Image (cartoon, rainbow, N blue to C red; front, top):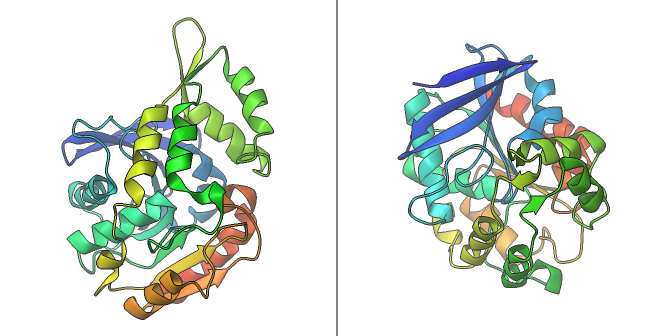
Length: 294
């Protein structure tokens, strides 16, 4: 049974599924069509807030923390993308969600693809944002996941204050183009305050690094076969990003009859935090066309 706490314009809740307690943020009327939001590795549900709030007139929006992230329990059996897919399938069952729409950023999109293999035809229209749908080798050194895992393990897990972390992170390459609100939400929602006032990352660097290290072992193409439903993939524009003419993208479109790929022509891997208005407009058009909410 989900547990809730009202905080401002959103609700904080928990549901037990697949052996652990999952945390989520919720907006909108409980009887509205459900729409799930899943974050990328190393993030949490909070940066979705600017987009989630603007979907509440049409949807019951549920933004989840994935295992080992945010306020969801850590994993007792290690970290694999397959577990994230199992989690999402179990959450649908535990919360009795009927054909929810989904917005999945990066690994959040992978979790949706994997869950759809556990529960065929369980989802409404899906939007994948910057989700790697193949195992194509990266074309830029910065996209090498083993290097990213090594860098991640060097991250500082505890800061003197959230303000100190804010100042240190704000000019880093990964965050410098984020809009102000999602960045502040990431700092607040992605850290817990210790008794002495220091701020600790909720997603431990080793957890994040483990996910990166596991990505190349996931043969995602095997999970695209017979994938039903309507799937939109949004691509950003940066060195080493996926391109519409990449073999893996072409395979995705051939394997998933109900798919469409849209290059946004801007942004980094963190496209939803840099250009939330453009991402939201594209999402609404897709959902309206395929979910009958217009």
